[in-house]
Length: 370
Image 1 (tube, helix red, strand yellow):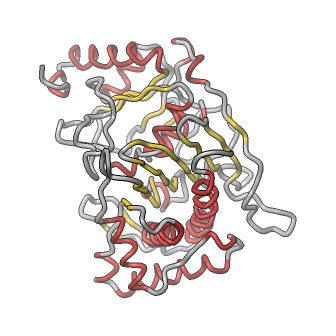
Image 2 (cartoon, helix red, strand yellow; image 1 turned 60 degrees about the vertical axis):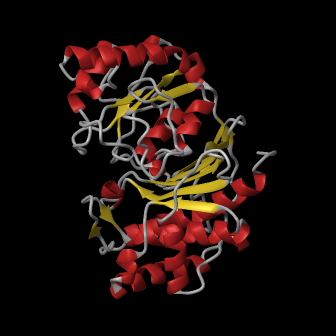
């Protein structure tokens, strides 16, 4: 890909490949260093190590940019065993054939400072400049089982999504069937998907090997067709999450798809980033998500950049009230409730079906007051 953000794309693709290698090496370990966070989701050595690797490498090249990431270093500073595990894993990145693009923290304290640079950061709106957003491991609960997860990197400029690079080590680059958490790429290569605003979306193998058995840092890419722009009501296919999350109104998700005659379960994935990826790949082209309470909100690292890929291919994304998604308000997306994503020319149909279903099922309190 040529043009705007070419240097950023080349750098981030290399670092995401290195990060994917680290995460896969940890999967082969029996002890993934799982902790319980305040929100009861697990966090692993890989989350900290990858966030440190991403921030160190991008900060070294673009030192005036700002950063947002899921993790802070509080647990590392309070747990020397965990700190040593993370530093040991990061040190392995120096042995990977990842070119000079990968930069490591100077020492464990510098690593903590970089992680905190992300963990204490927040996106902004006009005038906020360049802000990188990381989710080092999206889908941690499935990651610890060796199932679907993603490494998400996005760049916002003045609050607008302009670049997305995502590594999905378990998802196949080519599939005609719905994917789910336990889907594993039989080639072992995984998927790298990336794009910049206005320049389309590309995919490539994530962990392809060259003739010497080393990770190929520059495999050939393929541009995706704008499949959402040509979708019809009869070709709608769903992605959602069933039976693993209690934050959403699962019966509403099912009812909306039944009202639209969309076959279920379709793609079934825990992590939001893998869900956005399946929408970009065309394995699905519609999703709805309603939180159980109006005070529940998405987190910016689960969605930034990844949403843009579907939009580049003819998709439209709003919340359940039809309000455009606002990534500028903070680490939590408090300006929006839930998500409705569909081909742009069918979005109003899906949105109206969802709102009608909520009213029919006596859940109209989950819609914005008028």
